Image: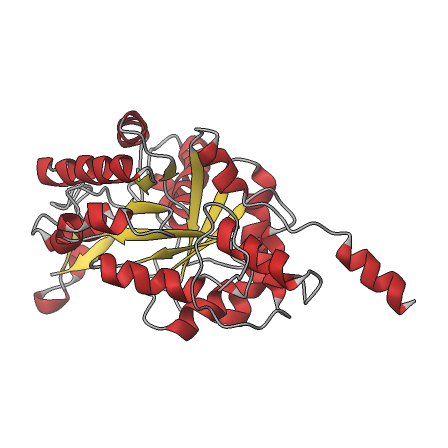
Length: 329
């Protein structure tokens, strides 16, 4: 019985990185991001949709414990999607433990220069004594009995080679220093691609949220060129068809149009339309029959409220355009 179980485990092939396969085939990988509402059912729902090729878990801005990340990755394995963990690769243990959850790649935020990129690669790659052509090695610590290894189901060399060749490493370019070093970062062996963070970059140069600003768009072009020269792929966040199509024309292969927050926002707007139709008055439905908040007109002084602008100076539309939200003034 024990031998039969062992043979059953050994007969299962190590899963390929589908996102890398698409990129190598010249296709664009469609990425969904989740952090606010990262849960097993949410991942299952997105995976079942068949719309996305990869799911990006945002560990940088949200507290997703390692054990929870492992659960999310296991759920995702039921679908043809690649999982990506975005994090700040501050030390060896953070990188190692994240990889052992079975993620298909790391998106490393705020990478400053090539030296930092080389350090990340060293933490993420095993010292395989028999590397194949193109396989980059490093000094990753050995466990061999975790999710990424099928719980010690595979020969050590096969497991190490799979991790070294099938785990994506993306370095994020998010400020002027990183942009100046983009070509050097992309040239580091083991770095698979660059990912431009338009939001962080816009903040860093003093035009927060202005993704269409010439300086931001010019930076995207520089990242695209740096990746091209190094023979690597690149990606970015591209919300809306115009930005998406522009990124595709520049050669982007890893694109995220948004994720859980956008889905929730658009879903709420769609539900609100139900009440608009029922009452015949656009927007009337979102006003509750018994207001939960004071009438803004009745408030004075520091408690007075003013309608929130539909499109603030940042250039980002209010997430709930049709909802009558108020901000303190």
